[in-house]
Length: 194
Image (cartoon, rainbow, N blue to C red; front, side, top):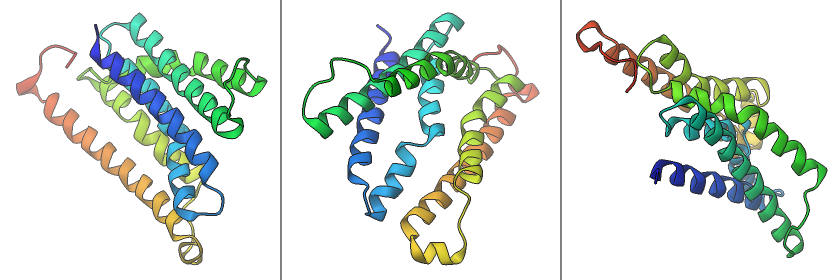
């Protein structure tokens, strides 16, 4: 049994369930809205597909695990959302759920492959390691641009969460580059996989 896959499956379901719970709680509370920003960020969900591929060692399982990880995240999100909203189990899929499951089927395999490529020591491995930090940075820069000083005063939880996500992405990217430089140095060159 691949315990990495089991861990990813549990993490995927936990993310989906937590995101649904926070959606129900966010309302006007700035702290919940800040947590909602993190848990429902597309880059975080894409990270599930990348992580799912990372635990595999071959292309086909990585692609399949990437899709499965996103499927589990989407299903957990909608099941928990339905249970919290109505208190009844879900027996049919809404068109909205089907749309996101279709998106998981389309995005999951390439994200799983990116996860597999993070195991490499070459430039492709470095590029793969930079996908999630670039997605975090891009999402925050485009969809949630850092606010002005007035916005930090108005909604400090949300603004500082956005700033923390950007800082996290930059630190992750710099650490990935540093790790790649050390691992790909001529003295350490060897196989292409970690």
